[in-house]
Structure formats: C-alpha cells, structure tokens
Length: 385
Ligand SMILES: NC(=O)c1ccc[n+]([C@@H]2O[C@H](COP(=O)([O-])OP(=O)(O)OC[C@H]3O[C@@H](n4cnc5c(N)ncnc54)[C@H](O)[C@@H]3O)[C@@H](O)[C@H]2O)c1
Ligand SMILES: [Fe+2]
Image (cartoon, rainbow, N blue to C red; front, side, top):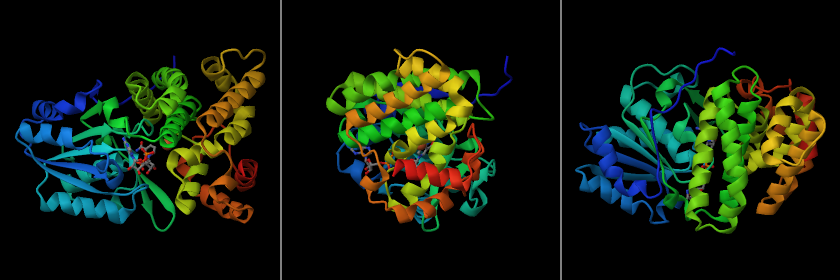
C-alpha cells in the first residue's frame, strides 16, 4: 500500500438550490460572524443570481458587501484592492461566489485581511502564517474545483502566474448548487468542464503525490464529466447534468489538490497569460498533445482512464492511450471549442515565447510523468498550432 496524506474541505454541501439558504448555513457555521463580503465578478453579477444568496444572508442578520471587481486570471492589484475593501469594511466572513477567479481572490482576501501578511511573502508552498477569516466557497462554473483546493493563482507581472499553496486556503464550507451555473454559455461550460477533466487526468498521473484517494476521485470525476459534459453544453437548463458537472469538478479539485497538476497546466498558463485565452480553453488546446508526449511514460495510467472515457478501447496500453486521446479530441469537437492555437490568434512566431514562459512553471513541470525540455515544449506547441 502507498503511504499518503490527504486533505480537503471539512464541509461540502452538494444540493441544487442550496444557495437560497446560504444565510442559514453561514449562521450555523459561524455564529459570531456579522459582516459578510461576497466576492464575485461583473459577469456573474449581471446574471442576477447574486440576489437570492445575498437576501438569505441579510435575512439571517448579516450585513453584506457585494464586491464584484474581480477579473479573470486576477492580477495582484485586484487581489490587493479586495483585501483593502475587506479591511475597511471590517469583514469577518468571506464568501467566494463565482468561477475560479472569484474563489481564488476570496481565498487570498480571507488570508491577507485575516493575518495582515504582505502578499509577496505568501507566494510558493506553505508560506502562509497564522489564521484566516472564515471562508465559504460557492462555485458558479463547473471547472476549477477551487472551492476544495488549497491553491490560489494570481497573475503577477504582465503575463506570468504565481501560485499560493497553503493549508489555510482550504475553505470552511463549499456549497455546490447547480442553479448558479444555469447562465453559463455553452462554450464556457465546455472549456471549464474540460479544465476539470484535465485536473483529474493530471492528478492520476502526478509524479510525486499520486495516491489512492486522488485516484478514486479522479476516476469518478471523469465518469461524471464525460457522461454529462455534452448534455450540459447542449441543454444548459438541465439541472441534473449541471449538478453532476459541479460534483465532478469538485471531485477533480480534491484529486489534484493532493496530487498536483503538471505539464498540461504548465503549457496552458502562458497561453492564458500572454493571449488572455480563458484557463479551461488554454488547457483544452494543449491537452491531447501533452498526453501524446507523455504516453511513453504514462501509458499504463492512461490505459486505466481509457476504460472510463473510451470504454470500447482494447489492446495494449499504447492502443488504449491512443483511444483516450481520440475520445478527448472527439469530445472537444462535439462541444465546439477551438482546437488549435491558430484559432485563438496565436502565430507560429509566438511559439518560442510560449515555450520560454512554460519552462518557468517549474513547480508544475516537476509533477509531470515525463521530463519536459524547452525543445519538447516548443514541439508540443507546434503540434497544437
Ligand atoms: N485555485 C484553483 O484550484 C484553480 C484551479 C484551476 C484554475 N484556477 C484559476 O481559476 C481561474 C479560472 O476560473 P474559471 O474557469 O472558473 O473562470 P472565471 O472565474 O475567470 O470566469 C470566467 C467567466 O465566466 C463568467 N461566469 C462565471 N460564472 C457564471 C455563470 N454562472 N453564468 C454566467 N457567466 C458566468 C465570469 O463572469 C467570467 O466572465 C483562473 O485564474 C485560473 O488560474 C484556479
Ligand atoms: Fe485548471
């Protein structure tokens, strides 16, 4: 048996409609909190879906500040502005209500407004000291799994991303409510769902921390997402498919929080950083090409996952790996997302720069089943172009 440790959020509520009783949930978990900050972005605010949870909080005696200034792939300045806001308003309960961008900002607000540490000190692994404010995470995309991970991603500098990884980033409560994802357009549903599949696949092949609980969650995540993604994209009002997607993304989040992601994410980050391609789509664009590159070192694991996504696959591990990659490419085509770098405006001249930036993602590359050189990264981008 493999020795391992596994951590996750203590309270996970998966219930369609649960956000309507967010006030009661928060009052029960945090009887001493009074001043809630709901952290979201303008896109989610415009759906009107903030109203019910906000009303529920007010009905249970909370003052509520809705902070909607988060932007996708949040830059450090956005995080710091949110921290200042929290301090000014004496916030004692932080609620992330949005996609990964809003939830990541919520984590950092809970930490930085809670313990006063400067942000520069907390990048990297295990650098948060002290406590954070009470933190509730409510995802509105079924993708990042940020509601159950111990990581927050910040855009630092012009194009680079840095991570904060610390146990304090695990929320107190995560609430999965499909009604909040009803407004997600099909292409966002598709790209964020594929992000979650990548979390599961990369956790399953993570070089250092692969473990039986992450494996179990990754498998179940892939089962849920591969059977519900097309329905959620084509029939966006299907609440059962939407709830299954949220649960799948949550499983995948727990899987990779304990068995971290690797080269797909390392090569995706520069695409998002330099060209502002959404996170899920950036991952989807390089996914098949990274898997093909990894196949020589991870075919046995990919073969196991093929049984879930391409159940008709037979033969050697290499054959099953090829079937897995084909099934993922077919899924991407079916949901209609872009499948080449050139479709998102990247030119062949940009590929060297992408490879330069990808090599800076040493934390992620170290988790990959196969070492990635600069020439390898360049070749993967070329194949994806
Ligand atoms: N912390 C983690 O574990 C983790 C994991 C993966 C990615 N990330 C980070 O998460 C971010 C990406 O998150 P994301 O993919 O969820 O996207 P996002 O949070 O950036 O949101 C994408 C878009 O979808 C809109 N949106 C969100 N919910 C909606 C809804 N229900 N209806 C209509 N529109 C809605 C938003 O307004 C936004 O325009 C990136 O910064 C990435 O680095 C974090
Ligand atoms: Fe991701």
